[in-house]
Length: 196
Image (cartoon, rainbow, N blue to C red; front, top):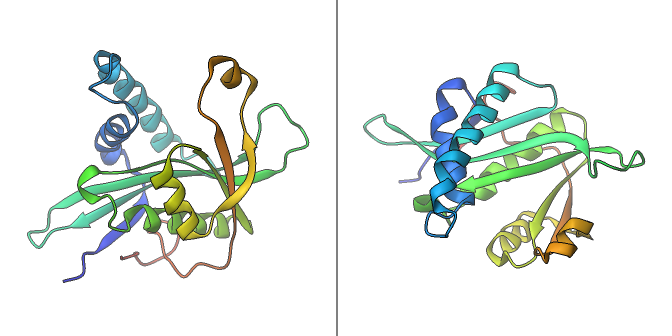
C-alpha cells in the first residue's frame, strides 16, 4: 500500500511538534551542548509561533504529515521557503526563493519525504513568480548533497563568510535549481493535496 504524505502550510497547532523535530534534527543531544537543546527548542518554538501567527508575505513554512489507517497523523518533515536576497550585505543581490530548515523525522528518512518537501517549495516559488530556487548545504553533508542533486540542484557558488573562515567552520555550497511549473499541489496554496 502506497503511503500518503500531505504537505500543507504550518498551522499554530503544528508548532510544538515542528519545534521538536527541528531541534532534534539540528542539535545533537549527545554532544557537550546537549543540556542546551531544550533552550534551543523553546527559541525555535517561539520563532515558529510568531511566524505562524503573522503569515509574512513570501515566507512559507511547510509541514508534511502521513496518515495511518486509524486516522492518526504523524509529522514526517518540515521545510521553509522565503523570498530574500542571497546575502544580507549586498544591495546588488536580487530577491530569490531560498529554502531552509529542511528536516525529516528519523523514522521517515530515505523514503522520499525530503524530495517531496523540496518539490512543494518549488510550487510555492512558482506561485510567487520565480523561475529558480536556491539553498545552502554544508560541503561535508554528503547525504543532503545527494538528495539535492537527485532533485535537480547544482552548485552555484561556494559561500564561506569571513567569520566562518576565522572559526574554521565547514564550507557551505550555494545550490541553484531552475524551476518548471510544478504539478504538485500544496494545501493552502491551491485546492487539493499532495501525495507521495
